[in-house]
Picture 1 (cartoon, helix red, strand yellow):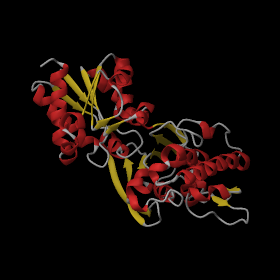
Picture 2 (tube, one colour):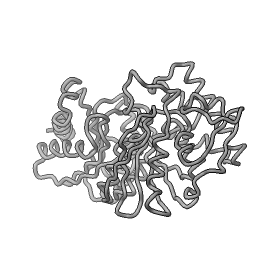
Picture 3 (cartoon, helix red, strand yellow):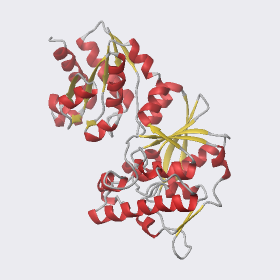
Picture 4 (cartoon, helix red, strand yellow):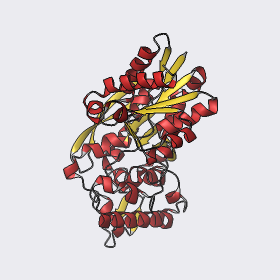
Length: 377
């Protein structure tokens, strides 16, 4: 029996590679003679760069950029062996870079992401880049990143807007005359970890604003600002009127929209981008069973995050798929409908305290129990 282990990270606990190795221990305990293949994955959020580096190879270059609230942070940029540049929004403009008590949904900016993209342009032209769009602290529609590339966002008096999405409601004009000319020579893929539109009930502000520290009143302000940005992109730039409603436009606080509008990026499912780079389809075809997982399965996971993406691919190939997760809010029937035949969570199996204290050991134990149960042992 060949078992393919293809998980995402357990956020703020284990990387995808560490998760995979822990699951492998559980597989080997349950079935000592089983073959194991490991393919760490990502879906556009944290861990995407690691998955690409693991699959393709390359080198990491640390860069100093502006963090979400302006303080400098070190962010990794990958130069892949196939010539592409890869980076993550989460590393430059991420929510985890801001302590919960300091989160400021109105002022947090994506400027660091723009600086990181420009760093990739400095040494190689033309540049083909993959930007993992997920896990941001900001809800600024990408204007912070774009401003670092020479775009100007002006209020009624012709003054540039301050950092953050809270100022978007005052936006009156977009000026692209000073935009970096190298952007026209770039090919950028925005790898999104969600399929939400820019604004509205399923938009960036309403769905993700509260976790970034936004009050109900601030959510409304941010949503109105994103809608205003979309209107002005259409008016001043002749932008696609359907862009704001497209899948992934609301990723990373609307940075998906901003990368498409100001950097010419193509938006794509982050899972699909990583799956192609890692040769996941071929690995699934070789396997007898696939085990996937992530730290938390919830309603957002059903939008195409890693475990569901893996399950759908496995089902298409006629290969059984199981999942081991940290915690789950999704019922077994819903998971079966997506192609996950058996699932187990660390919290249900070993308890929340043990799951958090030694996640790797809990993963191995939970995996072993899952396999024995699934095989009636």
